Length: 74
Image (cartoon, rainbow, N blue to C red; front, side, top):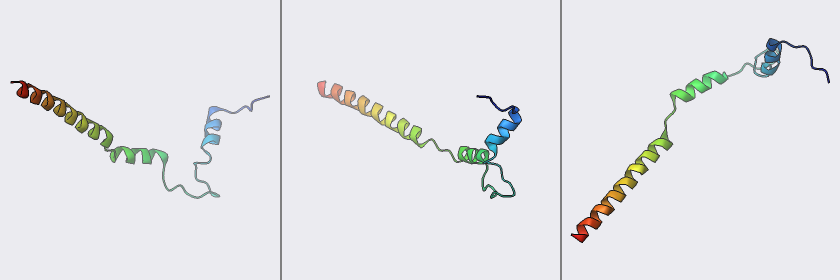
């Protein structure tokens, strides 16, 4: 099997052809890098916030249960 003699620029162009607009193709409504930037601007770490709140609540529950246990022994 013989590989075609293509430069890296030609290989990149062949891989990107489906993404590039042309006269016979529709214009792209978005650019992949723009959506990444938009996602970064709208990113809210809700999972991390919920985990932190649950961690604080669990710590408080453990602390108050030990505190209640010590008060009941006194």
